[in-house]
Image (cartoon, rainbow, N blue to C red; front, side, top):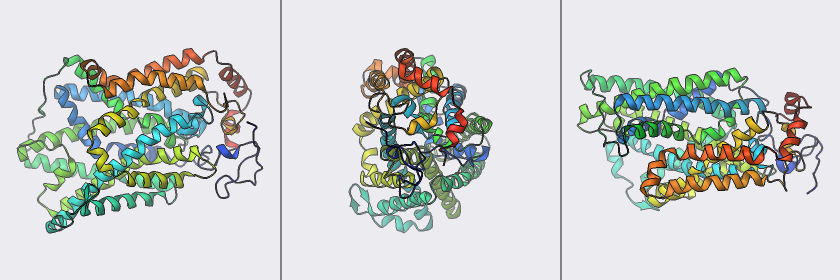
Length: 505
């Protein structure tokens, strides 16, 4: 295929000027390297608060007790796991900050300019499904809010339509619409939302903790019921570490979508330090404390913060709590499940789809799949989505091995937007990376979907297995690849920052 060189006045998406030498089929302003660096330390830190301060983050820590661990080992596992996440997330963040690239374009380095659609759309599919599910879960807080205002309203709208009540539909569409408002100015609106959403939850969690301590007589036992460790305490402890890392597996791929707007590597490091180990551990402590205290108050453990808020016998407190947890769930949904498919779909058809259009398409798909039916289907959650989620580890291993080991961070960004550039490989596909991805995904998929004892034993470690295998295999297969060697040699002869800035938007 011949390269199509476009003049500066040409357009990719409704008037987006395309730099000279760049192919319009690979470029639009949203996929271009970031020129604006407005995501300071605080914005990235607030992003992590939005990601962690959610219903899922609340219940995750308490859920680790089910492995058969004591409180001390749960917190130890969480602490070790989040430090590993911090170290790995820095690798992704530094790559994004240095190149200014979003995840699907960064994946072009490893998979080729067209082959990057394989890792991008895989990540995007998982995100769209969970985007719909998280939106539906957030709508449950809306129903709690309605009940706190007038309990008789809960009795209205029990007529079922496509598996959900009329009231449930109204709440879901409301939350779905609120998230679309974040599209107005793309990533800038999202940044402003994250600056508010994450800290707001800390206020409510602090108040909720004081309330629980007061109702429990200022004395709470941290012994949360659990079953005996099925394969011993060592396995359970290592599983807690591995599951903590797996909890962040989606953002371990596309954190560069946010870090690319950061002004410096130092800002990425500091935001990750305070937003991950420090913030995550503190929030986990509070979550377990409130969960343990719920037993002393109600005689049963309440793992859902929305349900906990609904039990507060005060309409104003219940309303404020429900609103805040709705905002919190929107926060994690935007970070983990909205930004990624917006970029991923834009990468699939840059001349027609930009970030905003990609987000709209993602939202529409998330609506029509009726996510409550997905969430309530054991086959869908435990097999289909689990299989897709299992391949995120191999994608991470390939991209990190390629960028840090094979290329040693020498990447000529402009070449990622050329059909016949240094990342064209074979008709735009790097088949070495594709075959490594397929081969190393097989064991992780089998571990995820098979319910035999051996697979259940390895299940908590599937992300590490996939990432490790892919990391090693991709390095061995590609270390003598002439495409890689020539691309690195050429990149070392140019000013990489100037090359990036020449096409930055």
